[in-house]
Image (cartoon, rainbow, N blue to C red; front, side, top):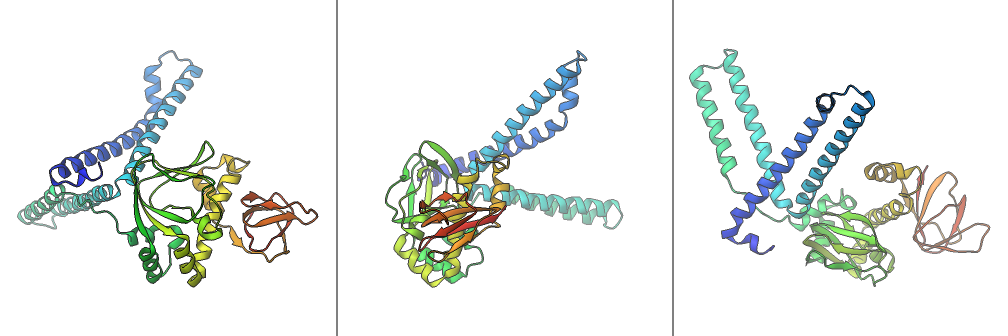
Amino acid sequence: TEAFKDLPILKNHFTDRITVSYDASKGFVVAQQDMAKMVDSLAKELDESGDAEKLQKTTRMLKDEIRQNRLSGLKFIRNMHENYPEATVGIETKDAIRSVLNHERNTIKKLKSDGMLEADEASRLIIAVEERMKEVMESSLDLRLPEPEEVLREVNWLKGMPDTLIAKIVNASESRVYNSGDTIMTQGGEGDGMIVITRGSVKVSIGDIVVDIMGRGAVIGEMAVLAGVPRTANVVADSSVTALWLTTESMQSIMAESPELSGSLWKTAAMRFAENLIGAKSPYNAWDQMRLRRWLNEGEVSAPAEGESVNLYGKVGILVAGQASASASAEAITAPALLDLADATFSDNAKVFIRES
């Protein structure tokens, strides 16, 4: 299906379907938001009993349904962003241009009404604006796939990195395509590289539990590159996926030249482990995902010397690589693990993520 949609005879049909679906979804979400503002008055019209408790129950039921509808619409839009980024970006660009032109037309009308523009000049300018608007709306979408460099510049662990470094990563990468349902990585399998998703989304699961759904710009399998460990999760394509494959050897060579890249990738891996290990614990289980990730982003990865003792009292400590033990104990804890200790002693080549509580 990915190949068929690029055929000239089907391209216009495909883009029309995408545009209608995307616009309808955005309209649906906006409608739910507007409906939420009318719930109280709507509930009174639906329930004329005058029973305050019953009215409150009806209001709560309506709000819950509207909230679920809105979330469904937002999820659909997110999936379209992940599966058809080139189409949704084109649609949003058109919408932005249309908004600018609408503002321009309204400004001309206001200048005319204020007596600052002659009627014939205002009419000429409005016609010109509407012609440009028509051209924009009738122009076809450019279904251009993003270049690897464009995607990599969006990736958090590469932000601020020099263009020469990004170019090295692109040159060392291999483009791969996976169909929906394809297994990309298997938990416990040999780690011989990592991928960066450039299009589509994947499900990440540990055992039978799905722990994350990741899309464009996500890096997966980085621990194989960083520490040579087996795969820590199953990764399955949730849609058609395009990704950049980077071998362990090539990435280690690039990281050897850039300590900043190595540190950034370690922090990315550490935050993912931390999210999985503490996400179900209080008080973090009451936080939404974005709040937890922002909080974790304030943490840092350190590399203690062999035998070094680190004070973890009042802190969240995540062992990312190597081993650790309580200072008074000989029993070793192997990464990845939450270090629920007041202080810990570390093995050689250990990495620990620490966040002040």
